[in-house]
Length: 156
Image (cartoon, rainbow, N blue to C red; front, side, top):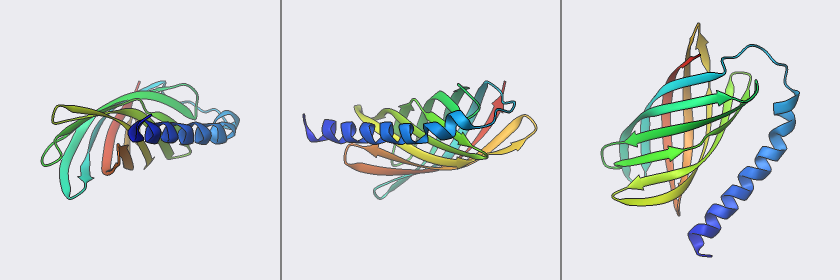
């Protein structure tokens, strides 16, 4: 196993342990009405090494329970970074906070690498609209990439 595969295996193991540790929070929460589906436009800024670029994308989440969601994400970063990220976010919702772990891939300059995205956001609900500022960290190979963003979502 090469270093990148070993790194990804270690990250996956850490996410699995985190998920198991958080499971009691997910299953013990009081249920209240939530939309089963949410789609959101994502806008932000990506910082990688000494490069920055505007990011935009789409995110879909299906609520499995009041506290647990599973989704898909496609995000394009332009400018110096110039990359695409495709991921499958697993989200734990605790009151207005959302904690996300997302395995995925990054496509950059014709090269594809595995990634793990870890993020936290704070949800503000306004009728049907949900605004969520967030901070995410992508681990791609040996690089660490930061994404500061805001999403505008609608439930259905």
